[in-house]
Image (cartoon, rainbow, N blue to C red):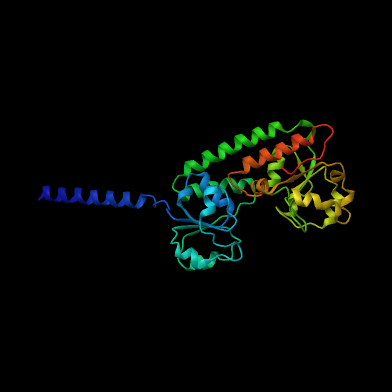
Length: 288
């Protein structure tokens, strides 16, 4: 009887051990992913999971392979029925996407991520890597980005350190303030921002604010820079008169305004601009 009882006990312990192992086992990594924000799409791909994407928002265009995927609308017109039809096991979306609650109500696994600062970007890369089943990849990616940002900062001429910059992200105007990922990247490069953190990451400004601020350097799209002198009062901006500005071409603009894995490349683009500005006798500068 003792032998029977011992055998039964051993069998019970074995079953408990198997149950504990099953409980501790990680959930299977998602294999069908929908991304509804370009920076999240780029993060998935930078983490070597591009092949798992089955659809993206209409603005996701990097890397080139994602352009052939189904395009599922934008923040305001997300195509919910098409998303459901793709049967994703993970949907990555911005908090400002209007469809988040509806997608969750339909039983989809929705992870809401919308980075606005460098710290947010680091956290989001880590969370996406964790969701993909490879947490270590997120930390490794961020470390590589940090190295490149530091190298870009080292190239910025010392004469420009402390210069005050106005970075316009959209007309009206909306600016990248100190608290934004762009503002923090500019700070890493040794620049100061005319838009204080207290105004928020991307505030809409009174145009007179910029005129009064008299930034040393102006950055925006090439089109915006070309149009700025015609704005009321902006012809008095010394940065525009002295051509201390950087107007970025569309393909580079996408890199600059997406808080994802290409932020290191963004720092390099900004450093290129600053190196050019520091050269004596600036001539007409083409869009970058």
